Length: 328
Ligand code: UFG
Image (cartoon, rainbow, N blue to C red):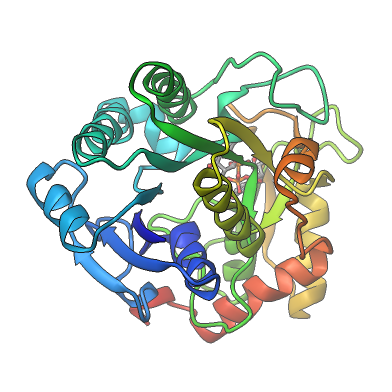
């Protein structure tokens, strides 16, 4: 398998690249390094390029005889998407359509696509199965849902074979400790708690403690980044084996409140994170927990990291060893 990984210098991308290589794929990372990190790409062939650059994309596909694509390259910050929708529609929708055009024009029809739990919005049911109503409450989720619909149409009409993976809360880091989460700005809970323990950020804000949950804070489904990566390996293999286009949730299936995550992180680090309760963050659903039964059954996905303390410990190893991320 000769796989082009767009966004392979990013958080989930870099972990997936490592797992694809372990599984025997030849990987070419294609990343414009706007949000990705060159140092997150260790051994793979690296092409610095943009998904809007059709010529470079086509040349890369031909040069490395690419026969499938794993597409991570996208903007992914929910809050930023609400104040800067143009960039999100442009990059995540127009950019992905451009990638699809170049793929199809060069005979590449297999694609694993990064989607998100944000496509659901605030569903009434929990755990969430793939078939519940999609009603995204933010621009980021809408861009991903648009692409899911476009891929379904391309699959029907042009023979695209894709698997879209809807991630719940990606977290943790490879146990090697040399790659991990490094977003600018960082908005995610686990890295922010760990950075607060290290004194690298301001006081942590708990966004709302008046939700209808057991301690009043939001419940999320935290899934280790290597388990997400492994799902991409399985999805790609399935496409090579003739699997039809499909969509799967990826989560652990159990929910933790914000306060539980903070307490667990404090017990992992042995340090207290300075924190305060703040108003709710706009657009945050109270509870988001995945049913991942479909991918377990169809593709045999089995998350390896099921213990939240262990998951946070892998993230802690990365943050402690790299308090300034890749720029340290
Ligand atoms: N939170 C805080 N304080 C912070 C940061 C987060 O209390 O400083 C809370 C949030 O309110 C939320 C929980 O911690 O309840 C998790 O927040 P994250 O920002 O870590 O993650 P989200 O659940 O908001 O976002 C995740 C993915 C997105 C995806 C979304 C789907 O990171 O890519 O789930 O809803 F779009």
